[in-house]
Length: 448
Image (cartoon, rainbow, N blue to C red; front, side, top):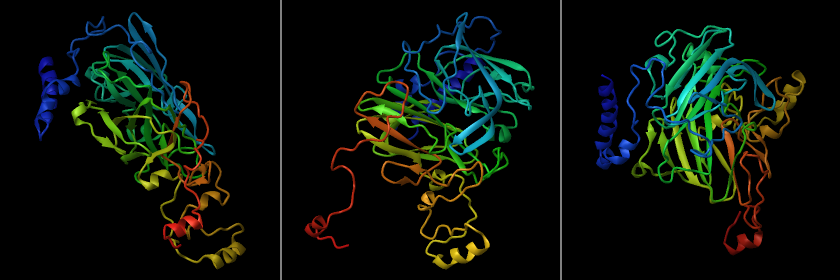
């Protein structure tokens, strides 16, 4: 039965490859994404003959960077990598001016990135310091059924104060996620999630990169002034985040010109897919949560759709210096705490409304007659513990984007390995769009 299950996985990959005009994928390239070890159907806690010696950072892989986040530390005990996750309440800052009581791991929202190497034997202890029972599901990982983490189905829940042990050998490499699988609507909406990166044991040619970023996409409903996210929301999420931060709280992704860059996206949003667009570049989607894509199946993109519950890896060479925007292209996902029940005031003359309403409501300001772009600089008072709808001041004007927005900063000079913000890009003379000169317009026959 064990061999049959493994063969069916291979058959699925082979069958997918045969469809259409990609028959060649059923050969060596498609097989490379398939796990090379059989299942541990009878594993009883002794040494795993399929496990390799523990992979080491630097020697076996380039460590990942999780902007605004961290990597979960581990130690080696008798050849096993040992990790410890602690589920607990966390006072989390989404952006300057907005904090909320969330649930996370090890004092973080989201939890730290778990990093390992294909063939590593891992043992993960999970301590529950919440007031509710919980579990951890290892999303996309091949492992024994009893380690899958679904409360009531494959294990009993972890009661408050208890510590459970999960243990398996990583049989595949790629980008995956972890999250609570008990009362998912509540616990995931409050932040119990994180990323998993498993590096290949023997990286194929061209797999090594200079920068390897990890970004988990999620969404929240936080009523202005409230101290907790609302887990009951279904559609009107108003805080959209990368690694649990909304712009201007998001850290940039800093690269040096000429470096090969990989960005691993995961999406554990409640309801929304996210088309992530990178300015200034095209990239190739090189992997999904199902494995590495053969080179013949990769094509250039400038926007990658990351559906709910999936991961996508992209790669590009950072050959164009500058500060390049990277954001979800759903326009409401680059706003902060936006209300969805506002009347449409575009084109309405509100010049008399403001003065009259101000007699009744001191400080009243009409909103949105020319769009929302001016709202950021009006200096309007906002409710306690909330953030304005849009972004922050940039090097030229106000950046009217918030939410699921960050900046890829590519520099000519050395930048180090800690992803430290180098400040705003200094453009060479003559390379910035500016006010057109009359003599140029006359020369080109342009009449304003």
